Length: 368
Image (tube, rainbow, N blue to C red; front, top):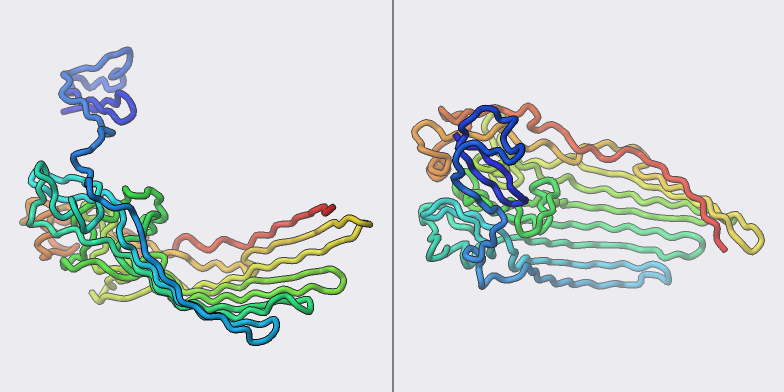
C-alpha cells in the first residue's frame, strides 16, 4: 500500500503505508514508511511538445448584398462560411510506453508520428484532423427609425458540424480550458463505437433562427419596444463513460432508443420575448428618465438541454478482454456484454438547464 503526500502545488510524494494512523501523517514532519517517488505534475514536457505545431486559426469568407427598397426600408442577404484550419490541443495517444499526451495539432505532427522516445502504437486508431465547419445564410428586412417607429426581421439558416467545439468546449457544458480540453484526450474519442470517424452537428448548432424587433415613440414621450427570438433546439447526443466520460458511441446527434434504433433528436424549439419601455419627464432644461426592461416576458420555461449520459458509472472491460483498450478496438461489445458492469443513469433523456424565468428591471436616469 502507498500513500500520496502533496509537498507543494504540482508535486506529490509517494510513501509506503506502514501505519493506519492516517490522522497523524504529515503532522509535525511525520511521514511513515519509505519514500518511493516524488512526482512533479507541472514538469515542463518539452519532449512531447511538437516543435512544428501551428497556431489555432480559421479561414472565413462572407458574401452579401443589400438593397434599399424604400427610403427607410432595406433588405439584406448574406452568406458566411468559417473553416477551422488548425487547433492547438493536448492529444492523448497510445505509445509502446503507455498513454502519452502530445501538445500538437490534431491530425498533424506528433499526433501521427509520435517521437523517437514515444513511438505511436499502430494498432490504435489514428488521431484525425480537427474539424469545425460553419455555414450560414441570412435574410433580413430593416425599417429604420422614421415617423416615430422602427422595425425589422431576420432569418438565419445555419449548420455547425465537425469533431471539435473549439476553444470553449460545449461538449463539456461550456468548459473554458483552451488547448487542454477533452476532445482528443483519448485515442477513441474521435471515433464511434464502430470505429468510424466522429462527425456531425456540434452542441451549439441551431438550424433555424428567427428574430423580430420593433419600437414606437408616442407624442407624449413614451417609447415602447420588443425583441422576439425563436430558434431550433440543439442536437442531442448519447454519451457513455468508457475510459473517459465524454464519448459518443453513435456519432453526434444520435441516441439509441429502447428498441435498439438510432434516433436523430434535438432539444425543444425555443422562443422568448423581451420588452422595454421608457418615459422622459421634462424638468426645465433637464430630463428625468424612467425605464423598465422585461426579459422573457411570457415566462418561457423550455429545457435547453437533455441529460446525455446513459451510463451512471465508468464501464469495465467485457469478459474475454484484458482491458478497455482492447475491448474498444474489437468493436465487438455492447453495454449488455458480460462483465461490462453497465448501470443505467436514471437522468438519461431528462430535461435540464431550463430557460431563465421572467425578470424585470426598473431604472431611473437624470439627464442634464
